[in-house]
Length: 440
Image 1 (cartoon, rainbow, N blue to C red):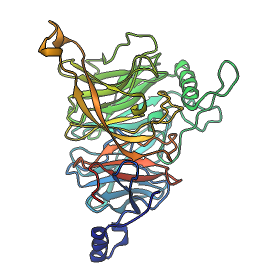
Image 2: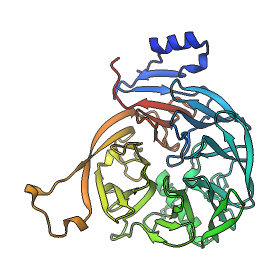
Image 3: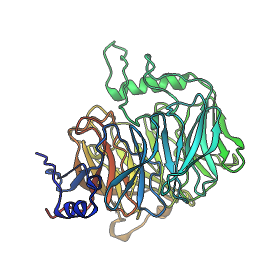
Image 4: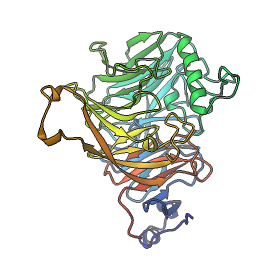
């Protein structure tokens, strides 16, 4: 049974500072895993950013979050939360990797239609200013030197649900305050599971062949430049964290149908498919850059729902590394620690693609290479996929969590905590889990 508590050190800090908000809203030791867990927010509906969006300052001392009242800043040393920008119609986008700046849009959007304005807020002073107008589309990323915004636009806005509750433009960034809902019937007329219903809706959107663009906006001049134009469904846009000119994006849709993961330069050159399917029903997706920008990592299944890998592609060399993942450890999203020695996984429920019977945990994965037997190498060993496995540690018991809200783990810059979203207490909140085990 979980029990909220405040340690002596935290109580002393509160007494000295005289500010009750300087302590976590709740604190406990997970009785299943032995790790300390904190609920950081008091306001239901608070949310951290999507797993590959940067939310931390370059110095690693603060992070930005969304609240029902707008955008707030959290100090990681004591978990203090202070408002940054107030407004119920704001969409927090990301923080800069070069400056202490939070970027946000003037209204929340989950699709590629309509227009919006992009603003920045100084994380320390709170001063805001408008930097761009987006006449159509939405912004999903900023490059490493903070000179270019990256956006996507669709000629029309097709909802994924017939009732219009789930928009189609950017489903990967869909769950700021609520949960995803998909419903569809199979060929036999019976309701499909959440995961299979989602596939039906994704395919309907893909087959609509809506014209789309991926574009950049130069923050200094306002110039809008189209990088990719297609009637394929373009999505999951992200800049490299270190290379200002490298973009990664996906062809969205049922993963076993599309060639998903692509890179391209901002000038339109160097378009490249990162993973080519070699097996029917093979899927790859939820791609992300390593913290140093040298690797692309993604969920790989050969085939879907049967054999699970976290697969890596080294950008400079084309070298590939695949780590095998057991069914129960398959995760909706993975992420990599700042020192790149560990990965996180946020697990999944029994209705999701892995159909894991006991997969509702947050995990810490430690890579383990599979060496050549007796040191004997194949002649072309260096050109082959390097296989590996994971050492696995459970960090948080998520059995009370509804996975229609994705946890979206990020590591704090010091690598000591996992930050995630959860509805384990009912409403969505932001939580932190300590990676080292507590002595309590």
